[in-house]
Image (cartoon, rainbow, N blue to C red; front, side):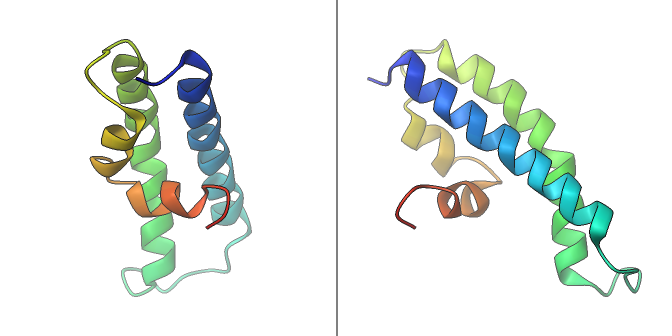
Amino acid sequence: MNTESEWRSLRLRLEALKETVAGELRSYPPPIPACDVQFNRLLELRRLLPRELARLDLAANDKSITIEDFIRSSPCEAALSASLPGR
């Protein structure tokens, strides 16, 4: 079972990721449309993160879902896993 503080920690990681993506997009050099894989990935993350934050709110109130389940089922799994301490 995950605690409220663990869910809050995950929310902070998602919010930090959202801010990081926004900052990277603001400072990104002009891309070549549809050819810049990193830029396209940042755009995709920017689109996904608000939905993931809403999904997190639902998951945090569902005692049958663990943080590990949430991360594993997230389209942002790689970015979230990279932001874990010790990785």
